Image (tube, helix red, strand yellow):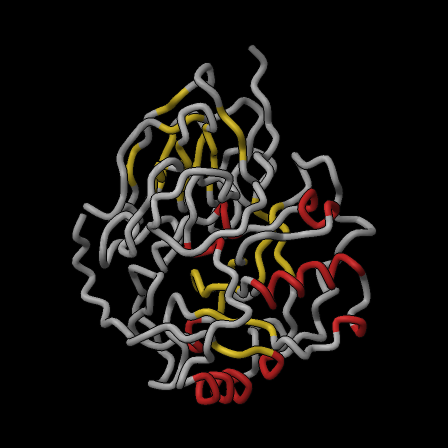
Length: 322
């Protein structure tokens, strides 16, 4: 059997929250409804929304010159039962019991985030994302480096057929992302944009000095942060205002992303400079050229958003309970 290096496309569905146990097409990737599937267009605004947005605006916005730029460096590889597995040696970026120490499928010809192959030769995060749809398993590793030896940081293995509780893989537990989320389901693809709809929430990042302490659900984890008390916590949820003039955006691709931000929003998942994260088009049928550019969402400013109600902030203890 030939190994396929293509992404599994998101499955469109109307979903009503995480952990309801309802089987069915509630993707992308996961077979059951999760937090990223929620339609939050009518959800209440958080009581601290104005304070958080004012802080971010005064601090310089998104962290890339106050432009909502798109990072197209992520890839999701596809594996099956015949894909070779390799054991890895944990690095200092592997934390126990947060992380999983299992063999990882490595499709021939694949790559880690931001690289042409599996070697982590630059200074990036080098996320390795592999979905085995036959087994219903999503493998996500931070700082993977594969050559003659295989060394890796935190590995999170997600059961894509499970109805996870609000604590996901475990309360106060990290994943390959700081907030404890899976990464792949929150990335958007050229195939989704070409089809005209992104039916899930998106992933975004902020610089460390613009993130406050602790986290809010659906996050399960946080890093030490240097932001003040009114800085947003990991897991906070932004939604584009319903009255934003979508016609002012420069492309239909940008308008499709903006509609997803109005309906599903985006979650703060990690620290970084390029705010919004998408899959590259290396393994997709549709290509980003002529569809969506890195700067097509530059017009979206902090004040064009509102914070979705998220409940009380949870202090980070750094003691994972699985």
